[in-house]
View 1 (tube, rainbow, N blue to C red):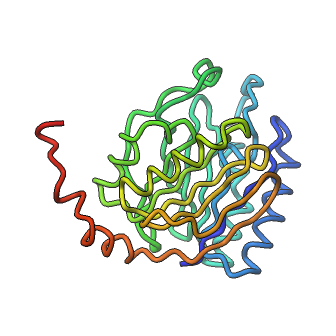
View 2 (cartoon, rainbow, N blue to C red):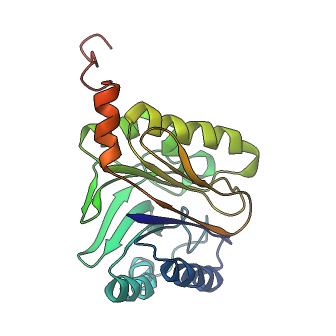
Length: 242
């Protein structure tokens, strides 16, 4: 499958401009044959903590209407996160509809505005079972391991890691792929940079610098099973003594 990470500039509380950027990037990615499009965390709103207005949750759903048109016309999968009330929700959107998963670990100031998610589970799509995590969740290996043990086929992290933590972002993104022997699509925002597509072997198939950029790679899901035969970490696990 051909995956694209859309390392987008995200401006807080500038929804129309963010939407224009997102649609422009999607058009470019689709022209290059992308089947899976991954956006950064809160790519339409940024961390906008303005008081919610009446009907705000309906507006969030309506904001995804242009992307519903894209998946209908191009039969692709779009992944990102959006705000809905007091939730930061990761989503997968394809022709079967919209599926949501909550951010488990709000960070810092977010704790005043977002509730913690209360469940972890992969999202079934025709491209495979997506193990979706959001930004700070990357620092908690339990999230990715839970998704993997629930038979996720690949991990996706959508984030707004700052540039001064890019080395941490890189190390954590690689670790989640290597320790779980699973492909990892790690999409950061343009201001932080460093988005990566990582194979189940821990090889960086494509990587971004800073700024707005799209990176592509062909992701082989069958490699996951090959790696687990060569290095049988999962059959050698000893959870009874951990």
